[in-house]
Length: 469
Picture 1 (spheres, rainbow, N blue to C red):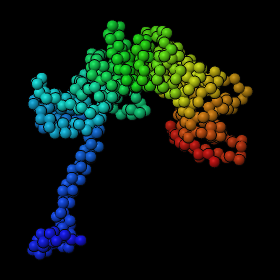
Picture 2: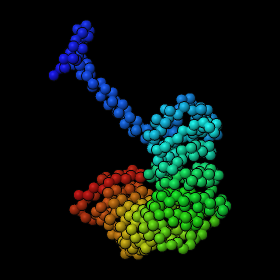
Picture 3: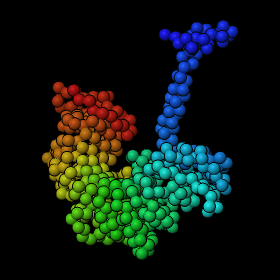
Picture 4: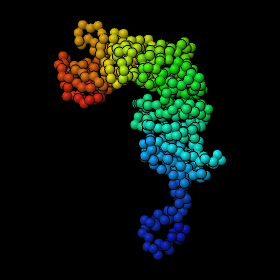
């Protein structure tokens, strides 16, 4: 029912301007207090959208909210294309602070040189709610391309992760090459240990750490050991130093551990870690070793506390230019022959004995280990059997019988007979994904379950779900 006051108020404009009836109704609706409500809803919607939009932003986007901030592309630098971002001498941070309170994840996808005000009394941009810094960096680079990280370290930061451009953090966390020099690394780790006491995830790849002096390395490892809440840690160096292992073994919350080492075999092995207490690595569940040498793996596989609770293990040996100290069989045996003894709860296993080449060797001891583990995911790239068998088919049947719980099998460099694919489909009832190189024609002995090679993908590196009737 129309309010008389609204009618009296809008009659004159309606007659003069000949407003259509629908517009008159809208005006009458807004003539009451609904315009105030509409304004409130609009402002509330904008505020809610701001929280979502600015929760995950690039460093350049957030700094350009500062009036007077400029960006210059420097394409002819020795580092390729870098961007020089300069802040004014006395920045006005009012607009920046409005958005900064919403920033939870700060990203950087390029080479940025950020020039902050030189005046020590000038206000500096801060991100008080920042929880994660994630950087994708290109090579080559210099320390100035990551020096700006220090500006945003604070006690509430939970994660600092640095990857190479193009790397998928969820699948190739250690695909990066070492990204900066020792001095910058040491300074950054020192600041992290001092300022970020709640840090839970640290993924960095300093170069040449194995070449530093024992005193310097010890100091860095001690600082890492102060991060008591650390849950995920990735690191690189020429070797996996025993003191670093000892330091990490004391972290009560460490669940994920990843190492990347140099491929050069001429680095002397670090030696055995020594005896660790029974309560070492109390929470460790995931271990990744990327481009590691066999000496490092051998030493780590002598630490039962490191391996006993693992449910995910990924070992990619270094693909060295010169001949490795061990052949593919010896390398894969380090991990596979006593898998159940070391990691009885293992569910996800990757073993690549020579980078992304070479073949794993599956022996009788490996089969026995598989039988005593609840494996659900297995990636071997390519493999050969070293089993005592009466026929050419028996090794495959033994292998498949040992992994009945398998859900994913990745042998992406292996060519299979159609008959072998039939066995895989028949003997692994829980299998969801099989990845292999190619398939050959063969006869299927069980005619009740015909299988044609056309039913499968022929493409290189093809992966597909198995659908069984």
